Length: 271
Image (cartoon, rainbow, N blue to C red; front, side, top):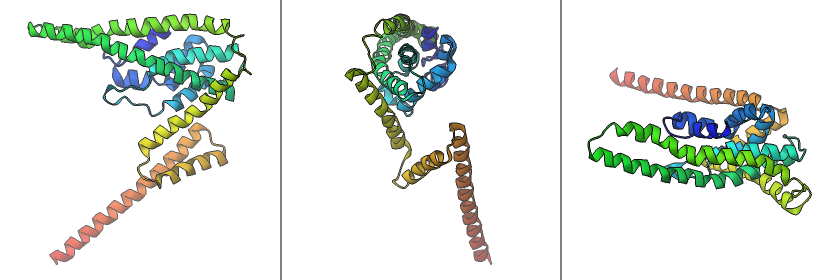
């Protein structure tokens, strides 16, 4: 099922397209719901997915340039991080489990880039077939090249690898449990790296939304309010929506005042 979900989260029309697939089902926080339903622990998988979502919160693919494949993060990283944390007896919302999940997401995401470009390379075969058929006047090939043939690519590059890795991954994690003591230097290194990676995701997001230094004041102010008031994510969203509405009303009032002033000036000139 995890392999099927990784195909469903692809960008082809047959696999629900870019908006529903790549930019929705691909995202760790959304995918964790389905992974949790498959593994039988929705709450635990969502908690594991949170640091992964933070790392890749502002990930985009301009011009096909991919730094990480979120299909791998969501449908390989979440299950493996979940099983690893569970085998180590870690609470899924603990700092250790969150750091482990972040490091696992970064590792799997980078490896998953091979899946993305492998799919793209395989799709070139279908494109070559399509151009050859178009030269012969066979326009019906367009539907197959655009819709059905890429599914073969996703089955070969997404479904099968995800299924194999997830199937053997849980057993491998259990087998290597004793080889990964929590107090070892390399596990501490993974935890340290994982705890730093969310800062990278936030920095990428700020680089996208902050246009001038003064915008950082509102960013810090929001964190200060959320921390001092102990707001949950939903409560913080509601507070942010209220401030956004106030800002919207202020700008609308300024525009209306400017229009009234301009209309008043026109009337005086007519007189």
